[in-house]
Image (tube, rainbow, N blue to C red; front, side, top):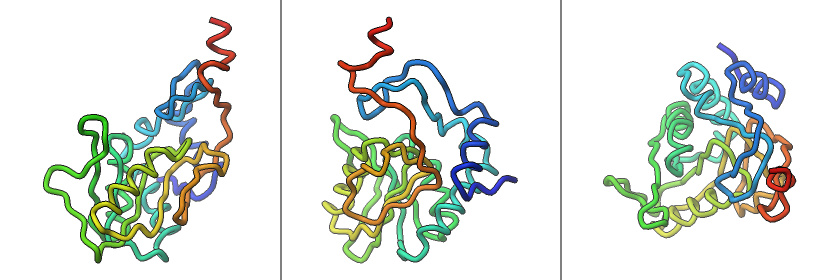
Length: 183
């Protein structure tokens, strides 16, 4: 079992399982890119998912979270693994009428110390939206974490943020995308 603890080992894992894709992609953020990190291809392997979750847990343990909250769909598996490694609840928010909400009986309370966990952060938009779900429920958000940070340090979060691998891959506004311009 590989223990991803630095950028090189995480990227080696993505390459090994074929999760570093090249082509033309429209990211969840709306940006376009010539490369895509498909975390699901890594997380489909339970040992790799467990190792990534444990590595994130090691980085955030000092924040003393009591619950992990992830946005569906991409954050669910890694959120579960981080929750397992920390020994805390792992829940998720999902879209209903275009807005992230807690459903399925999931609740947060003022005494909850929430860690928001995602697979990939690019602009930080869904992480910020997930943070707001927790705050709207009255919980305290103690931090956020992801496997991959594509933001170039520009995720704009107002809580401590940790990732296993900061990765610089090109992104473009749709109207300025050279891949679109090339057809």
